[in-house]
Image (cartoon, rainbow, N blue to C red; front, side, top):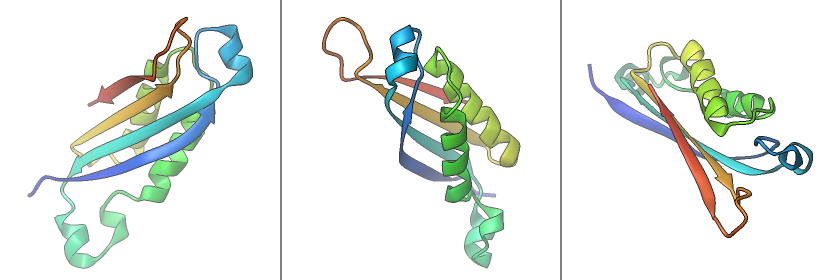
Amino acid sequence: MGQHSISVLGIKTFAYHGCLDQEAIIGQEFEVNVHFQLDFEEAAEADDLSKTVDYVTVYTVVKLEMEQRSKLIENVAKRIHDHLRRIFPWVFRIDVELIKFNPPVNGPLHSAVVRYSA
């Protein structure tokens, strides 16, 4: 049994996460990257999507979870992870990286990034 990886990168969304009331009103851009560690040898040999991670499913889950407002992006990253874990229980590890651009900190800041791994 091998360990391989699949990454689904650059899922861009517009959402309303943040602790400030203003963030719930105006929203902002976010980006999500998801990394999977798994054994996809059988999928590769059989050319069978059902034996690996389906990108469409990953994209759909991310968009769905990003639509549910949270104060903390840590909460959103965990929800995305847990939802994907329910769909792909046989994956060894899932890492969710959520990027919040230009967080309101009273000064210039490109982004804040959280990573949830398990």
